[in-house]
Structures are given as structure tokens and as C-alpha cells.
Length: 119
Image (cartoon, rainbow, N blue to C red; front, side):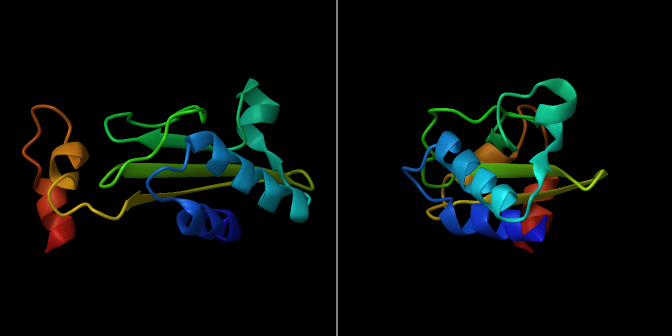
């Protein structure tokens, strides 16, 4: 799980598509003989679930290109040798100083989570 999340975080930057990130995850899974649990169990069309900004969770990877300041949720669920594990990570892409606070907060929220994250 950690290897996949680390690889996704290394490759996530403005201009990269969520589909390209999904292919990175597929490569890590293949190298470690793991399979996408959402694909196996639910017929999910990608390897991992990637949500951007106001997409809450379980985003489908595709042609969407990431932009500076995007809030990215990476959700990795893998099956290997009959066992399943799930882990997720949220990150803010470079260039977030002026953009991310508005993207990190759901409409109508008080943004307390963003304030807590920034300290």
C-alpha cells in the first residue's frame, strides 16, 4: 500500500492526468503481484480511486488533468494472495498557497479542517 501511495505522490503534479496516475499504480501492483480490489469486487474501471477537490471519494481515473493547488485524495485497495488491504492519502499539489483553502472546504463548511492542517 505504502509503495503505491508513495509512487502516486511522487508522480502527482500539475498537468498529469488521473489516468496517468492510475497507470503508475497499476505498475506498482504488477511489480508486487497485487490486484485492484475495487476492480475485482465491484468492476471498478480503474486500479485506484482518485478524487480531486470537491469530489468526496471514489473518483474514477481518466483524462482530468491536475492543476496547481488541487486537493488530491488517493485511495488504494489491493488484493494479494487472498488478503485485502486499504489505505488512503490526501495531498495538496504545489501552488496551493492561494488556491487550496477554497478547494479543501466543502461548500458551506467552516474550513476548520483546513485551518487545523495549516496550524
